Amino acid sequence: MKEVKNMRVEIVDEDHIWVNNRQFISLKRFGEAKKDVANEIKLLADKNKELAEENEALKVLLKNQLNEVVDSHLTEALANKICVEESDHEWECCGVSTGESHYRCKKCGAYKTYPIEAIYR
Image (tube, rainbow, N blue to C red; front, side, top):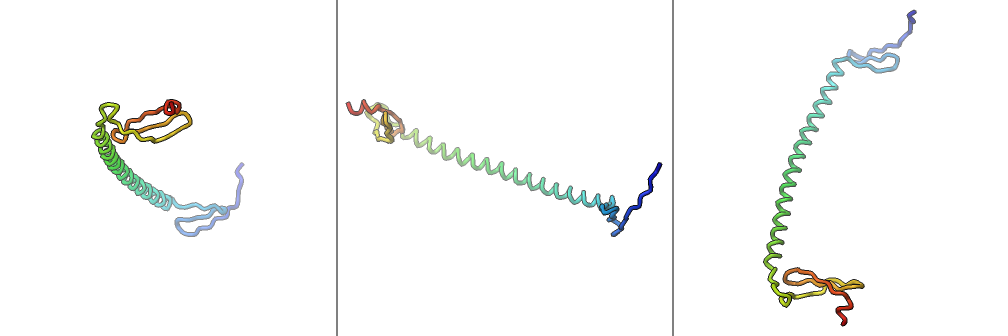
């Protein structure tokens, strides 16, 4: 058996209707709203792609700069590797701990450590 209900319908304009205090819109208006959302998503996707391309370009630039710096330090370090014999080194103390002392060569950058007992013998 069918039941008859009274419904409150309020027509605001041709695109907006209220039925029992719930808003409904026309399919035309719904399509326009979806189109607006789709346009916004496309703009965001385009901007995201642009930023990704800039990010990749920046990565390449930074990598090239880093390689140049590393290459220059490596070249400098290899040029300074002139210590052939133990007597060629110019040792300087670069650290002391409770058990040993650490030394670095000023010319080539080589490291060595000595136990504290060996230094005071």
